[in-house]
Image (cartoon, rainbow, N blue to C red; front, side):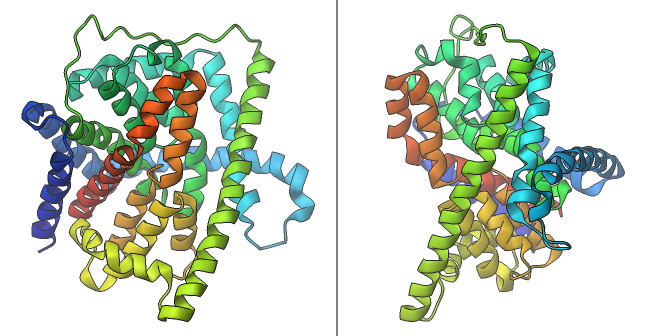
Length: 393
């Protein structure tokens, strides 16, 4: 039965993307089918095989080592504020971002990341049928972050037509930055985080190919990566450390605001209607959760967590899932977990349009105009990933 529901869910997701397509007649079916098959293969390997267990285990152990190193710096500065045997979200989850960001800066300075990103992007362009720039941008987004990635294509921004700009922004919203992945692994099982990272990369291309189909000529597809002025090693290191700290503080501030607002709204709804706002969202989103493969008796709770991520951000929803207040089966937890690993939420519209506007005001206004369509597509990417995982686990 789960396979029938999952296949129906898959058809619904692709259908919802097709309804919003700007050019239904020119959707390229072959790359889409190829990438869906690749998603099933990669998802099965990562979740159900010894090779997958080895890969995920190695990645998770690597991040555990990095988080322990980060803890040394955090404890040196904030050790006296930590209550023994108690979990402090800002210190345990957010501050390690500073160290991971510094490590990314070092790899960027040594020219390791640019080479990896460029050549993975070139290979992906052969699979997805899109331009090299779009493929580069998707990989770079997963490493640099949804706002920082646009700096690396600054020279191209002013030259891009609306349809190509949409794809670049959709990739940035559908993926998550490497500096923040370790923080996700504190709240979710690492295998779900890694699986979502891989599937969202292809899912972003699939949904964008349907919503926003187009062809790119060789002349249009010159890959220009913006070169920053030459900096010393310690300039780069200091810059990335400060960037990481800014991200940690900004996310912390957003969490304080969102959690407090949700608590207030829940109280109002509970007092007036006898139901919390999150439970109400759960009823609204439960049909989609069911089509992703969540059993009917868990659909409302699961959908409540998913909807929380959409209206606030992924950290609020992950914290809710990890708090123990939501009781879900292993399979449902897998589906919900992969759905949460992306930047698809309302606040990301402002973050992405602001990042682009800071580099090119006119293009930033273009992004703001298609912001809701951008969120729609990125949310469908998360639904697609969750549906595929629901068929695999």
